[in-house]
Image (cartoon, rainbow over all chains, first blue to last red; front, side):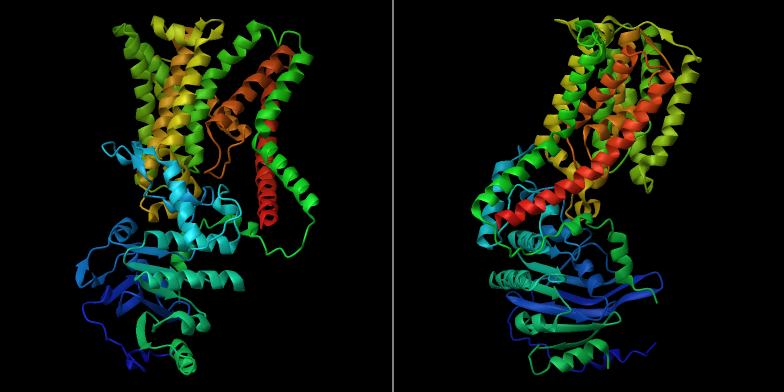
Length: 266
Length: 364
């Protein structure tokens, strides 16, 4: 195994042109699983209205990093800040409540339920509020209506609104997962390989949704292996290798080769 | 070197099984009329799949009516309903557990334990409502143990713990009762188990009341939605902030309580508490859920499925009795029907997926 030339930082070029603290900042995050160091002193920042691409080969630590942000994993050391204030994210519910939405690689959809139940999973509209959460009565029609409206706004077309998610095509499922994040995100949206295994047209739709998220002034973190998408949509790219951040770069057509060599460490 | 992200995704499986259902863009053009006929055919197929178990029940009833002249007599029908009531209640509790991808093997033993505890308390205190509360409470308690050990003991599957409580509850019931039935039940329980209102057995009405309550709760309450979410995708449920552990605990407690209600009905029918009640009832209840058309894989089906399944089992038993089929052979028949029902569940799932894909392509 090759020795890490990790700290070289070939093209560190953080464009800190914005005033005020970044929307989301990770400061010196480390995470280990037993003897394996998954994240080693990783720091990065994302601003509102910006798409940050998180790049790296398989096992570079991208997924672990975003799972720390979305509350699935707990960081061993380091600080997560939202608009300059340190936050404790102990669970996915915590992350959601502070305005961080995540589109997981496996989409985290409920195949046995319809779109609106998927949209509102874990945050069902229900009442009356003096009852404990589980005992409240669902406001199904309200949720259906809101979901329909959101899907329309995002131009996500489903063949049959009442059908369960499991019977939709891959692209439709992906679109629903991204739309769900888009619907509820207030600050940060994290997307883990949202275009993997999609056709051309479906990919286009998901990329449009991501652009939409950015235009709504969210801070967007995007994991992808597709360089074209990175150049197409990302404002900035952070490259990881073997659990460390090895560089930060503004992705352009011209420096595509450079990015690739940062990823593979050649 | 093991790669942590990969480890994490491994843990994330059960992943979507329906990936195979993904449709492809369909460029072929159909003429309008063929399209309409096809869509009607698909709708019809889907409907018949959905109501399949109900249809089979109707066909079964009609066939049996033809086979035996006694089947359609009021007395026999009342008998069927009364015999089915307890199984139906157990099946409804079991259904909630199966919705969450679980299984509760203890219900038959819990029924026996509840009836014995009720009978013992009845020796001391002659209050009908108290005895009912004691029986249901006993069921709740065992259900709590099941759910608690499963969830907080981090067991991989509820099979083991409920198998253990199957043994423990039965043993406890035998121990407490000294191995024999304890006669004596309060009037209200005698009525619930053996009485009737306008010719309809009270136990059947009680089962219907339980069905309505559970159907309403699973359909309209947030808690009900959570049960389906946990059954559909446990990982996603956790990640969306659904209190998965509480949901799981609650379904095992309800299954226990259902066994308690089953004890009330059974004890009332025989005017005694017995440690031998509910023998193999766990199998009947599981069979009822599956035969009724709920999915063994969790997240699919509603209370009506459990009811239909229980009725089917009750009717088949009854018919085999009427037709003088001996009791050993009945066991074999029920077993074969379970196999067929599970296979039908698999087939139905596939067919439904295929029809849905066709449907979605048609609409595009």
